[in-house]
Length: 145
Picture 1 (cartoon, rainbow, N blue to C red):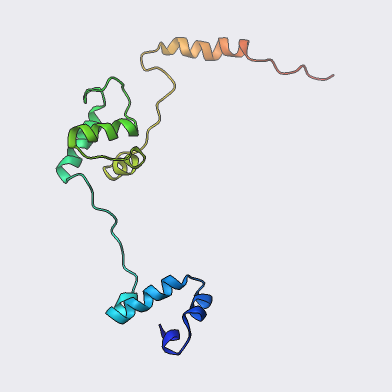
Picture 2 (cartoon, rainbow, N blue to C red):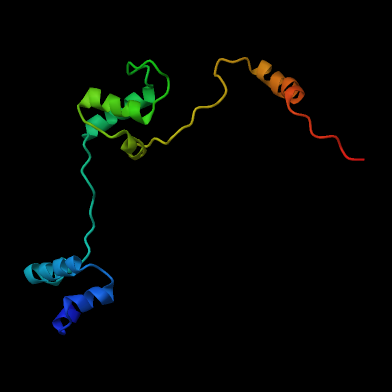
């Protein structure tokens, strides 16, 4: 603002600040209508949560219980599945891409499913890793003499 008060043109200010002329015009307009306070950066809290605190608690309990308890056929929550649950239970549309952020705010973290089956025979798995896998793997080339 001082540069403008000192007689600099908008074009000069744009060049000095490396910004657009619309930004400078907006700043000048804000200064004229509200003074220096209008030029102070303000913190933006972001959009309000679309689920009430009670709905958030209900969602957290449902996620904790698992998708099967919520009436879904699969055993692992996905972002798309949680978004569908929110739509069905609360009538609120969430893009599945933002569901992990919502769950993180509720205290959850992304978990990757383990490759081993939960009901598998662990001793058979160990035997396969220790005995069978080394036999079927490609053998290293013979050592040069």
